Length: 188
Image (cartoon, rainbow, N blue to C red):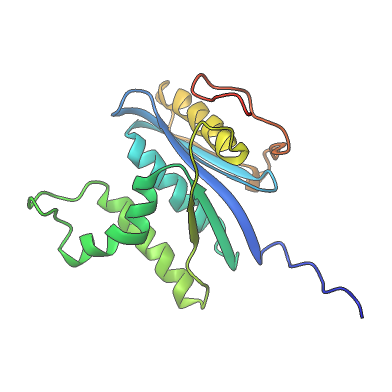
């Protein structure tokens, strides 16, 4: 009997996300890095670490709208909890907190809801979110961190840009460790 065909690359895909901020608030960056070395990153001259984390998640979802089983690994419990538990409640309560203050990052949360709802409307399953420990030798997360930190350095120069291998930039060699940042610990 012949072996079953390998799944099409868009059937299952793992991507890690991260955000970075110089100060908090301050110049911020976001990134996602896929298991095949594709990546995207963006810079915001004014932002927060949470904004970077949410944008990394948002772009990982929207840039992979055709992937059936999209697995997103993030070191941010805030981003994971926002997506999986909080954003719908915020919308139901009229985008105010229990203290009757406006919900932070509403514009990004509305875009995350739209991205999730678009997947559902097309018959795709929800993304799978996995929490990973940051700065602990998780290679894809370390690459996402490296890209997000690099983006935040551009943001510190006042640049608001997006870079991606999906539009011609080289893929990363995710079989090797990224250049070490001061926050990364050596692998054991």
